[in-house]
Image 1 (cartoon, rainbow, N blue to C red):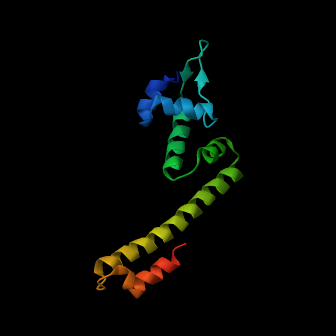
Image 2 (cartoon, rainbow, N blue to C red):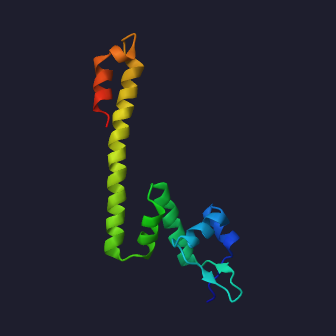
Image 3 (cartoon, rainbow, N blue to C red):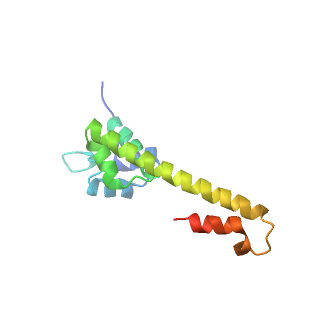
Length: 128
């Protein structure tokens, strides 16, 4: 069975990213595509899967240095990196929920000037 190796443009199109992005990720060590004898980059299904994971991690706010370690590291390090990002997202979620609650309050606030509202002032003093 022959495994299809994709050129960089084909891989980029399949992933919905630019070829420039794939070159950049290679340059900083996130991925290492196969090279033909003439030096052309080639991507197999395993590398496409890894890139899909990298893209999802980037959407989750993970820095590229952590993504590179996640893709190339041992299971223990991967678990640590994912747990760390999950915890950061959860902290951000709590913060955003407080902001949404504040905005909901402001929409209903009966004070003519928001800064005169005790609930608004409580929120302002609680934001870190």
